[in-house]
Image (cartoon, rainbow, N blue to C red):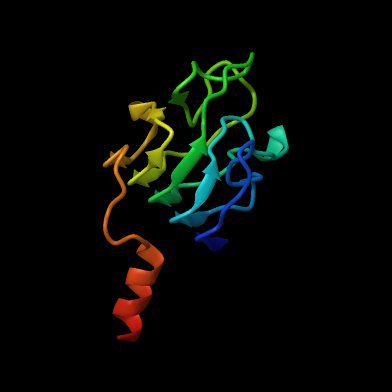
Length: 134
């Protein structure tokens, strides 16, 4: 399935949801909220949490730092947790991630561009829609 999560504001103790077997192509576009590690669901037998086409565009992170038993070090976000049965994402595209600083494990992303700085267009979905509809 494909989905656009567009201009959504979610809670500080959350992250976008990606519950395994379902997500194939998702654009997280110009959203605001927590970007907390390990806030995803999905049965271990149905991983990965997301397939190959995850794009995160201009995400404003209000909270991202966690450091618990199953988390990466504070300030680091990994997409394919080694030594942990859950939390598996194929490499995403991340552009314009800003707000609370967060470093992505570079070997686990397709692209990490302009980390710490919002980009133009503000909304990739709106820009593509305008181009299609004129």
